[in-house]
Amino acid sequence: MTMTSGTRPSTLDPSEHLAEGYRQCADLTRRYGTTYYWGAAVLPVAQRRHVHAVYALCRLADDIVDAAGATQGEAVAETTRRLFAFHDRFVSAVEDRHSEDPLMAAVASSVVECGIEPECFDRFFGAMAQDLDTDTYRTWEDLLDYMEGSAAVIGEMMLPVLRPTSVAALAPARSLGLAFQLTNFLRDVPEDLDRRRVYLPQEDLERFGADPADRTVTPQWRELMRFEIARNRELYRQADEGMAHLPPASERCVRTARVLYSRILDRIEAADYDVFSRRARVPTWRKAAVAASALGGRAPVPTTPVASAVTPGPTKRAHVPLELRPMPRRDQLAPSWRDAKPTRIRRSLDHALASDPGGWYVVGPSSALGSRSVIRSVGGREVALWRTSDGVAAGPGSCPHLGALLTDCEVFDDQLHCRWHGLALDKAGGPGWTPFAAHDDGVLLWVQIPTQGERTAPLPTITARPDAARSIAAVVEVAGTCEPRDIIANRLDPWHGSWFHPYAFSHLVVDESASREDLLTIDVTFRVSRRWGVPVRAEFACPDARTIVMTIIEGEGAGSVVETHATPLGLGPDGRPRTMMVEATIAASDRPGFAAARHMGALLRPAMRRTAKRLWVDDMVYAERSWLVRDRGEGYGV
Image (cartoon, rainbow, N blue to C red; front, side):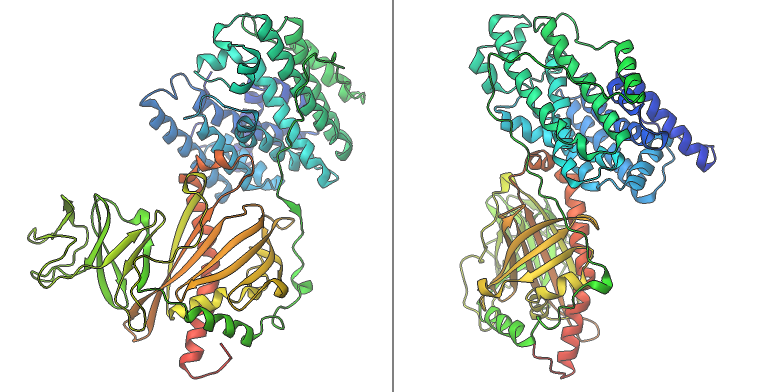
């Protein structure tokens, strides 16, 4: 059955509005997530409602992609729209700490009150989007990639609700999420077939010669199910390691849910692995009895499985890049000014400024150029860009006829047609109108302008990037009153990061032993929250005078890059120089779940852009001030 979350304005007062939302969450959990419901029954009411809220959000999102016909033909576009709209309502509710929908208000209240990391929901919605275009998984590793966002992350979401006593509870919580979902996959084979999905890895089906589409219990099917159940029980065993790190009420809650879910595997075995004729269920009376036992202080005991004749290989634990690295208190943060030596920054800057860009300038993201022309400014010069059948073309921004601005012009047969009179301009140019070389690298647009002191190069210098098919790219543009060198100098001063941007970075150290004038190597922790961070090792290098690139070389997202480009716009109305900072973040990861997250690129890119833009609100102040003091003749060594 497909559930929907309503959006009609509530006439209740705020406290009743929230209470009504939690009632709806509890009702939904009781009807569709009985194992979660009975497991949560042993928690205090204040915690219990948060379990219901997290389950309700996940259930409603899952129902959108599981609705009849949702992933077939033209319906996929509408399903995608509904999923994105639901995601946006959730994000708005969390950011506003309010929603007219009582259920969504309750969900948002739980997320905020428990401090559940927003990144968890990005991964979850990414997996939901993956269900719209992926119906089989070749290997167990491929399936784990999907389950990272659809299952392991649920354990992460629930952990703040359960208030663990140690960070050691994190990996077992993720394993329990994986165990629960694998049990669902084994139980729900026929329902998934009806939705044209097969979650069991294709390599396993081929190994045992089993075909779920036959909907028949054969010797091959029994062997396959024995194998998968053994794998499933290993995940439950890994999850059990976390029980010791939970307070008593939470331990009883998790153990109750774990026992109830794992008994589904007992039922499948008792039915001779026949999941086609009847759904394996644990009766409600038994669920109530297990919960009552837990409430009485007696911990439910997991059943001891009979050893399987087929033993799967070791179950991979998904790597968790987060580390417990609390942010230092502001008054305990070590100032970085002694390390940020002006002479050191200036040596690196001089080296960068000596690198010839070959006349190439970044003029914006590739996504900014559609079927019509756009205008960009480079050094006070208007440049028109348009797409052709074999790439990108560029030329002066004024029409040679009467000087019309060549923006938003139609393109026919690779020719740009002026909006005023339809004059056709070819990429080869014509009298009074000389084109520029242009390049689209798939992330950024470049144009080549003859520049004094620079030797013309056939193409811009582009540093190594992650494979486009396995990465997510987002571009942000911020203009400022400064020169390109001030943008580059800002990035050549990584020491300011943890002091000036404590919300984004901490534990930053420049490894001078691994650095040179043309290379800065740093160890830094990217902040996820005040307590959690992702430590990485990165390098900064300048391939040309207007570009600096940060490449993560060790840690989460190794190979990811952040390219910062500085393009002079010309003088502003006040006669001061204006520069456009264009920054491309190209993220990649081998971590399970990143492939699922890529399916939500349309949702992730705005978040990536917001993060980058927030940093540049501060950093542009730095760059503008650097230009101002230099323009006044004040010497600070940079």
